[in-house]
Length: 249
Ligand code: 13P
Image 1 (cartoon, rainbow, N blue to C red):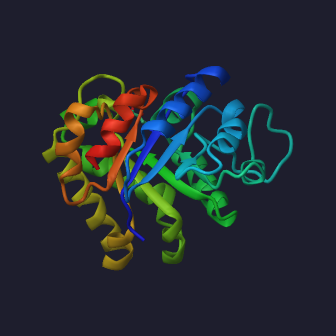
Image 2: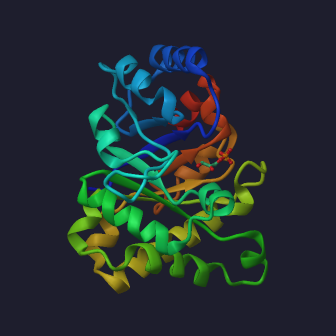
């Protein structure tokens, strides 16, 4: 079902003490909301965060997961390990994983398929680079990313997918897509899914925008009809900013 979502991707930030402090502040200041609120701390503090947020509506999600059941994959974390500590949602395909850790569409297709098989809700990230946008190729790039990683899935699998469109040029740069650019791309994404599946699948998937969402621009971006929320990096590390963004939804 399509829902409003605000998710904080903490990336490689916050040690254990800082994690507790941020979660305490978020818990204390959390407004009433119909939106789903999620945080993605680094792996080592996931268990701690789950315990801390036991009674909270804030869900703890993972920043990544591996595509194999278990075995000789040094440094990796499996779906079962996440489920075992109470984490049932994982970000997959973040542009930093693609850029710095060689995650290709083919690898991501395996990760998504395995996550869904394990009943792990998948927050799939994708988005074009600056050159793609400058050359006018951004729609093709985004369509290919969707096709290569997701379009082999059955329609029924889509109930466990959330999309996060994150144009790479807007991540951590302070430059954000304009609300119109976000809406234009989100509408294109929904149309691409309608063409491959149907309007039902496309209409029920939440599509988040990510890339320099701040308290000052969240309202306008979230007001667009095809934008169902945000995946927030930097601003999710500051409780007051993240709370302001939750209020904006
Ligand atoms: P920023 O909000 O810091 O631009 O990061 C966005 C992001 O990559 C979320 O996954």
